[in-house]
Image 1: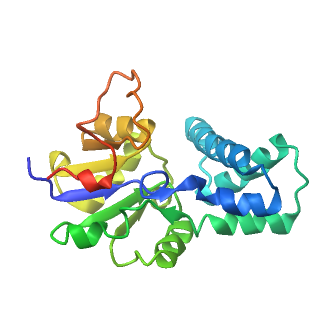
Image 2: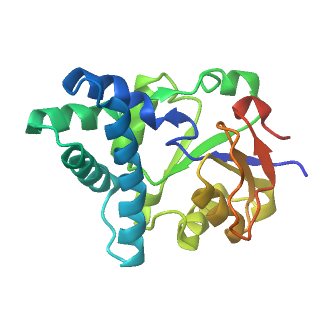
Length: 216
């Protein structure tokens, strides 16, 4: 199989969501890991709940709500400007080590990001990391349906213009890989932490440890 479209999730796949810990630590010393883990866990939980109740809200709202609750759970004194600064940090997330050279190493391939994040979050993120020219961008916000709903992948499929089996979708998130595989894409689980694939009844096409191992 020769893939014609290489599609990447953003958060946790291309960009380290826990790189916010340094900024959190500036405001709340020794709370970085706890707040960061809670923030990400609640972010995923909250958008899944909003999807289930068919009450779509932009990922910016979801991310802010998750942050507020993560900070409350951590029993820290929070001021509005601190929340704004931490939200801004989501536009400064650090890419994983291999990401900046990804396009240079695969100049013959076209790369697309397909994320639940809004364009207002993703475009500055790419700009701040000098990656704007390396990736095309699709957002689930364009159709107001979050991954892993099949309608989200259907939107990406239509925009890409290839057959399902010609599309390889990368994510570090098992829920995202499961959704993409269920829709019919070939998938590559980016298993950076060398974990066991969860028993979901659907398996990824490929399992790789990082994005230096892109299948042809």
